[in-house]
Every structure is written in structure tokens, then in C-alpha cells.
Amino acid sequence: MANERRTLDARFLQAFADAWNRHDIDALMSFMHDDCSFHAVAGPDIFGRSFVGRDAVREGFQLAWQTFPDAAWLDGDHFVCGDRGVSESTFRGTKADGSRVEARMVDVFTFRDGKIAVKNAYRKDRPAQPAR
Image (cartoon, rainbow, N blue to C red; front, side):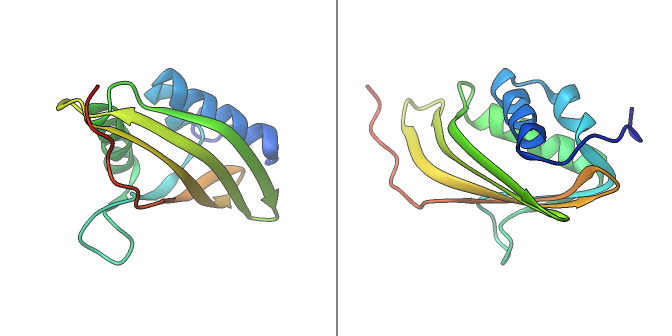
């Protein structure tokens, strides 16, 4: 499965987004190159928090669902141009304390060998909404 090649187009990125919304870590990792990186929306470094390598990326992806158990990426719009791609969506999620986040975000991708080598996530810095 790690060497499976897919057509890199908007449908590829939509299928990746669908896996996020299903909270399907195995499906997500099937899109990732063996030598992959994920730069999260927040963290101490210039790229946020970076997860490098398949095991670390898997951990980073799962942290999103641990932080926001109801996480959803909505209204996706995707495009691919050569070895780069972009997904724009609305992130919506609720933390354990009940505070809610809803903000537009963008993922910038770098592809290698028909897979995602780098997922670099950006999200608007909108204050959390109070618990309902």
C-alpha cells in the first residue's frame, strides 16, 4: 500500500479530506509518502510543531482528534499544480472544556511519487468560542 500511486488532482485531495472527516488514520496514512512531514497549525517553531517520519506524522494526525474529538473539515476546495497542492476548508471542533473553534484554514501540500510528502497546515487565529 505504501507504494500505491494515485492520480494527483482535486479528487485525490478530496479523498484525503474525507479520510480526515471519518477520523480514519489508516486511510490518511495511505496517502502519505514513506518519507513524510506534517507541520501543524500551532507549535513553538516557525513551522508550528513539525512531525517528521511516518510514525511521528501518524501521531500528529491523531493529536488533532484527541484535541478535538468532533473535528470536521468542511466546505473543501482543492487544487493541484504539478508537485504542489492546496486544500482550503472550514475547520470546526470542540475541545474537552467545551470551547469551540471554527475558522478557515489552508493545507499546502508537496507531493512525491504520487503521495503527500509534506502537509503544511495554516488556520486563521480566531479566538475560541465559549462552550454552549
